[in-house]
Length: 446
Image (cartoon, rainbow, N blue to C red; front, top):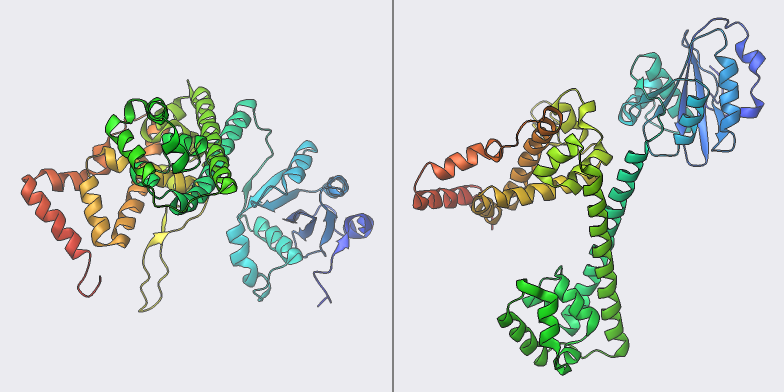
């Protein structure tokens, strides 16, 4: 047994002549473990023999690694494989593609699970990970992963999706800060207008305190202008009356400025997010998949799913698309222990987040909001399970709508629920909902 089998050699110190001696025509697979600073490559020959890892500086020595691999493939079959994690390996993928070397992809989960099987030890480190990748490729547990330059349309779509998501995060940050400040200095404001209201943000950005609003004689006209037809005169009068009698902590000049600046930042983030959505709608115009899915969950959500999960037409079935979203069910049971089913949460968490919000919007449109609210009031866990089940159904529907251009029918998602609610009189349906809420909350649980 060799000492220090994972002891790395710098890529420029590899003895190519000694490496190839006695291995004429023998196929080889090269596994690469990708890191931000260094890459580790391990050769596995077709006879099962492994070489020590090569340490490659990323990205400075990528060219040296490609030259070495090009010499290695002379007169033999060579396959290079990497894990599908992060973006640190994209420069290597591009360099390998430019030199005509094929690249295979190995699942990170597969490499993690195979680590103990490989050498009987559960430990993981760079050299071993590269050897595991090379072994899995030799066993046929990989898929082709050629580097393909992204087109202009895809680049622009990805740009505006990231811009929209980033602005949403910024907006949530400033709104969270404003909520605490308004609770201290202007608690009445959020009782009449939602924190997400553009009108409230404009009021706070302009005045900064209830005292400044109460002192302005033209405040009512400004509120009417900002609120438009959505803000009634009765609410304006009540808002002004609450400002005059506010019981919040009186704010100083700097506290007032902080409220104003935070509100301006929230408004700016909201406007920039809407700008991203407008560009996404323009890009989706004429695209059959995005337009079809956009009718179900909205064009911005459809674009986000395209960027983070991929083109649904690349998946062979609706179940595969659902699995890529991390919504497939998994279970861990053994002997008498029977685990519960839960989703795998693989893939992009951002896709699941936006699909979750789309499901909430769909609940309101489908006419089953009362049923869901009863579930939520009786047992929050039951409500979550209902939402996850609807997300799973919605992901399958989006595949059929986008790939096969089928017409979306809400009834097929809520078929059992709507049949239960419409099959009896309103009073009977109400009693049924109440019974379900009670049954989902067992005795002794409050």
